[in-house]
Image (cartoon, rainbow, N blue to C red):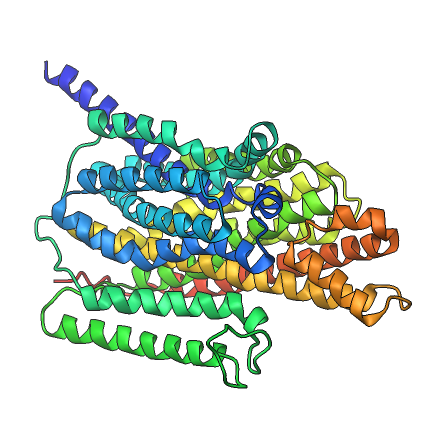
Length: 525
């Protein structure tokens, strides 16, 4: 009888892992599914390249800003309950995105989706941390991490098929039936859990974190539009000659200082803080979060540029683009199997380092093969190696970060590490997107034929950059020479963003060296 009950409980535990993985897949797919749909959204809603970045970054930005809030709140009110709330909010926001008549309302719906995702993601990890132990926990983390890496590529495939065969709106509408399936799984298989001593809420810290991350990403995205120092195209209310961006960055710095000082003050007073300074006393947790942020910056920024390049330069359909990007998912899932086979044999830290090295190698392959006529198999080869590295690094880095965090602090700990990843992702979209579009503008300006008048040159460059490359196919009919120059410029700009991503991963690899110099673990009291 006891054996039978144990078997049932074990089966329920693994079905809970499936449910949690589906919830993670829903979140991550929606962060990338829009990439291949962007050209259709540009055509339908008339958004420009800055709004293209906001459609993607707004979701990730809100995600990053609120993860700490909901990771802490879940420890108090119950992780399963918060997961249900997150799925409901996410599904309702998906309906809003699917029916959005303007770019502004689409961005607003993406913001609400980010709220739902911020509720869900830290809860999924803390549920796994409380449900599994020992070798099973390593396997669960591997599945969780590989789901993140793999779904980042499945999103473009699914989005491509839906966009091409139905409408870009179905890239969001598909979340409705998936959300219902996840809700049923949560009710049937996920066991409620909460911290024995739930941490206190910190609304001031939450507000400072939103201000910090929001102002930073705003400055990085809008800098090329408003001007980095001198006002280029400022908002209507701005009357100074100096751009608003330096003032926004000043707000970022002040918010960062206030966030850190406030967290330290609350910790010294014996109160819980949004910034867990006591957990940051654990070397593996502190340094692992820094590595996670840098690695995520390099990882997710690439997913912005490649789909745009494949469709607008190579002429791929949305579905073809998704199929090529599927190589990333296959590499990531192969890494999941490799992690399971080496569990207990190879230190997680070395798996992380091997993963980052594979990511750098994959990006190096991509940078080498990028051309206006690159064959699909060359792109797939680079993405496959890159995806294998994503799977290795993402899965085991989670284990490294949370290895010494007490289970009763798992909600706060997982919220912090998820925030580090999502801040990195938002910065990747902002930084690498800005590199892509700025480089595209400058290279196209210089590569257009000398006989093109300045006014027409500016018009061509603005059309290509503002449409995120979607104007290139139409340009072919009016000026084949200009279209050829635009394809070459977009290819060079994409290569630049890929190499920039590789550079950030090199920094992440260098930062991982500090994880090897272990001290005695200081468990927070």
